Image 1: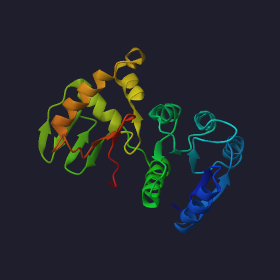
Image 2 (image 1 turned 45 degrees about the vertical axis):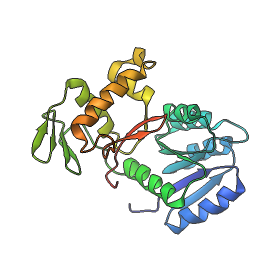
Image 3 (image 1 turned 90 degrees about the vertical axis):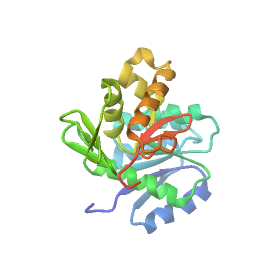
Length: 232
């Protein structure tokens, strides 16, 4: 990047502001703070930051609604902070356009890693459905619709390849069960998660060295799945 990335931190907890803003600035990021949803939306519309870190528990507007409104304004990546115990809150935020989430309490290095990954995807080139994508020993050839581990071809069914392609072209981003089901089977399948569990299990058996400890297709418990980012 030729300039410091600008981050909008949206959180009403002063302790979080005092801890996170200096941390982010120490790594070279510019930081603007908004303590409520209304200010956050106005700041995104006016300043167009490179990334938004958004708490779900805001005093004026629910964080999920703020996420939805931000997504209507811009494609700015959104990393959710959540202290809520209900996975439904995080799923809702991801379905409304969030790119990732971090659960409070969190480690600073974990947050920084998620920030870097989101900025890479936003400011860099996203993988396209052309050419090849390689992660470790795994290579996906989009043009020829083939998958290899080292030089050995892995035979996938059309649905398995479709699932792998969808995951890989959103590498590093958490994809909800609902989003994947809609993409692979259509909107009528969003209430049938068993389809996805079966297909994901079949795909992992074929591409993962150890399906019980995935390296490529990572589980985000109760929320969805994530294809491993390049830096993992």
